[in-house]
Length: 586
Image 1: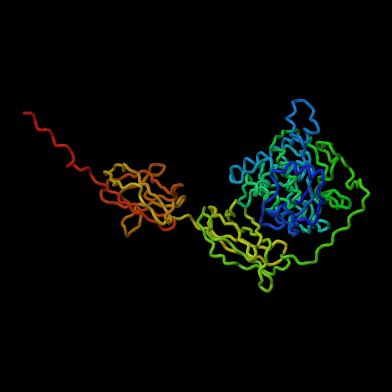
Image 2: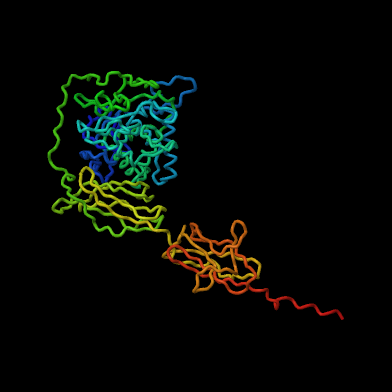
């Protein structure tokens, strides 16, 4: 299937007139009209531009890669068959294998929590899974969601597809020379390295596990702040998975179909689609259809189409045993297209230059107010537009770009500038690197240093003006509570220390007077590791007094330099306030 998140040069055949009419009927209300930033995406006129043929394999548009072109039945999905009743062919077509369906729904639930603004429907994952691998080849998965055998795309050696040299040392695809798309959602290894997720809780990220792959696909579709409830963002997300107008229409048709209803069927009983975008006379072999492309360390899942209407057999391969079945037509093979010799914008880039990025500093938990801007230039210093720049966060940090990703791809504008998404600081302080690289061009990257500082406060105030008094040996009736702010805003999760000091000009811990109690009830006069809450409030434990009278000082300090000194008075009870003795009876 399509080498998802990769680039291939091979141009798949257009769908037939009948298929096109069916797509139009199913997606009439969703006619493509979005304008996106990347090259090769639909324009406002609805025309289909040429695909971006950059062969880097970046996680942006994938070009017109091979994929299953079967369209859903024109009638509505069958209701779930009754218990014990055999599944009809249409029921098998409409149903989704149980484990695969569970993986899609589990991914939707996780994204609903981690990225609620994305509004990812599980039916979109099901539509893409159908088009990419026929729902893991009819649900041929084990109980934990791992495919019975690896699902591998074609070798990306430049012969009909993009040239993507090995990036994983053959760990995932068994090929130490070239990359191949892997798993039921068809990631290439270099993209899985940053997009992979653990969806089944086994602490592994396996592209051939449907739970891991579905969750990774969900996060991939939810990057860039896209809201999939918005029609334009939905199209952008799908086109970022495979930059093809026909692919978009096919996925949308299955999305609409699954939204009308579907049901669970036993694993391994789903129908394998029969049509592919590269099914035409003289087309090059599809994914894993040639024995020569079989990697030495993995048995590839056959991707050749089975007979129409024939279901996949649990634990078995495709019904077709001939890896290269003869074409049913006598039309002569089409001659291979000659590659263009004209240099692309990417070919003209000589180096990257900073485009006015200021110092990158943010407090933990905050969004960086500065953005990284990089300009692509020729050797003569001329700006280069329409070049894709990949920004990658490197180093020991939990900082991310907006949306929670550590990799972002941005196309340069007419002035040659690519502005990275805003950086979001995590809780980990210190410096990290953001590296900018031109996709598809082997030139030096440009590194930016960003720093996350500790949460800070510049002002502390008491929330009450009640005097804090106590009698010797007693306890203070009121607890000290303060509010921290930074530049007028609430300063939450700021570290603080409270110390009972000897004098205003002597911050040494006092050895007498008021005190706190530790867990064992023993006196302590310094409290560390305190932290303001989400409202910037800090309430100290109860204070007690020994037998020493006088005025004492409590000093509270926070990260960032905010300091507040509070007076505590310990005095004997005022005898003048006691009632006068009653006169003796006469």
